[in-house]
Length: 486
Image (cartoon, rainbow, N blue to C red; front, top):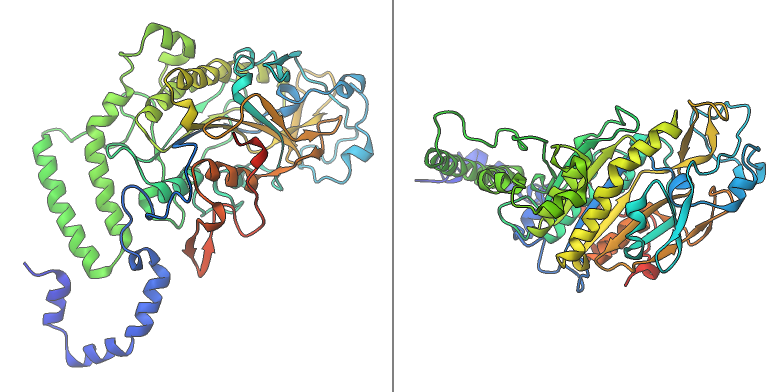
């Protein structure tokens, strides 16, 4: 059988041939700009090229526990004596400065300081303060590196969550997991390199919307976008064979479809066609791997108890944490959980304890479970959010409906595991948890550090897009936070 390109040449006229030659050099140049991956050949399943990782990695895989809505660093990780001494009084103008506020608090007549809603204690050998709302996370303090000086320019949810997940406030850019998949490939041929799950918390319900572009591939090849697992017996849509179609028939159909797509790819040189072939093949392999993944009947009673009472409820944060561990031990490269409900502008005294109960025990159980199985040493755990909350209240002081507004100038995230020093704090804020006073860490620096733990130099890890060498860390300066590396 002739390939389509040979068939086309059989009927190519002299006039068309000469015209194509005249445009040939320009076509080659345009093709190299539009599809640079074709000029360097198809990437292997192990990653973009043999040049990655750039150096020996400390982490082989990542789990990102993304707390959507803005975790209150004031209440959970960054208590200061001044907050109690100044409770109910106006935040000093010298502290508040001219920071841009959202429309929800910019017209308030007063900005009274509200101390943490719950007491906490000094935890671990380092004695880092963690709220009593997180008693199980208090127990893993020696594994955690708490960064108290993260900052972002974004003060509204969509730009902020997009920024932290893709390195850019504008939609259309590749997500962290897609970059990692693109650069390092997969270690498990039967599961995608990048898998995501979403859960709804019991704090603010419904929480901020979570869009699939947060795990999209952007301008990277489509095969590197995240695959979302849904709760329940059908975690991936259209994965099961239709009624009346058995595995043998499905295999034959896919072989025929792959051949047609290969003909089309040879004719047009479209990398998305090749990505489509890979997607069909992955879906076929997932018909076996996914049912085995979600079957937790083999987990011990002790393990299930450790993750908490919600672990048997599909789609809960606890259930997703257990599935995350099962994915990581199967060498899925990047796993990301999104947990909604942290946007507590109102009724924070009621909403925050509920939200903390959702995540406290499962998060600690995941870290301990990875440690017990020898996986934590080469798995990077990232507990992140898009920004923090203000030290001043939103609404009337003392009102049950009072909450806290967005605060991007300083907030807290923590990391554990592969390549990270445990039992430490990094960075500091002022006496009002409002401004950074020591070791600021930008979102770009966080991305650079995550890539570094995976053996990737962020400044050399680029993709040609619209004539630019685009990076996860963007075009502005970014630094690996070396002081937190093990």
